Length: 401
Image (tube, rainbow, N blue to C red):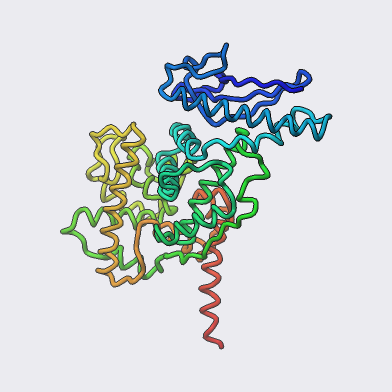
């Protein structure tokens, strides 16, 4: 007959000093472990009595929960043994883990906290946003792992579409984060693999139109007279520089320093991927850099005067905040530039990246080289631009129809 023990695994303490509560099932000197979905400080646990000490603010509620779950598992196990005498401890765990359904909402909070030092500030904020939306949907109710069904996913999909007015692709991005969190919970034995609702739920996406400029449109922006509008002139130069120089992302171009330029090439660690960017600057790019070279100071100074040289940006949160606000300002000015040049496309900084990619492939650059310069981790991403160029050529051939 199996025995049971509730304990705190202090070898898995998280960054805020809390350890997970586990249930140990022992049979024939073999053990299996089930996470009970709660974390507490090891000093708040009475290992002799296997209960939460009164020093914990929610000791009564937690002890009631643990006693209830222990009782559920014991009942379920006895039922299993009566039906199958030869069941081993691993089979027993697999069968009873469904009887222990901790709070998915509480797990969301714990997952969020665990990611702060593992991911970029941007990704961390994205996870936070996804979790906040789930909480709005749930309201004052709890959300257990047992509640995570295909029906729940469909209901939440409808809520995102109607309440938040989210597009199909935004909904897809939200579900990708939720799926990742559920997979992590499965790894922690909080949910059986076969109960993952995403096994039976297809994520949908819609094809989006990729905006890019033609050579003629880019030339209009290059030649626009902005002498009296200093900030707009800087933002235009950044856009043109990126459109010719590898489609550098705005987060990287804002952080470019003179120490990253050796007179011919740009060397920089990409903020998004962590990869080292090494791009030979073309003639147009060199002309732009020459313009700012007149104001060149120390090697640590920024090339484009967006961030302040005398401010310490070592805190990732402060840096992310500064880049985000600067990006919004740049995109606002690019919209004005589009109006001034009578470009009807929705102009924002990322279109400079699309412009470089389509132009490079149109001019005959090999996919492998374009992919490496753009910093793509997947060749399929680069092939999207090849498809755009092919569609252009197909359209050009329509003159013969």
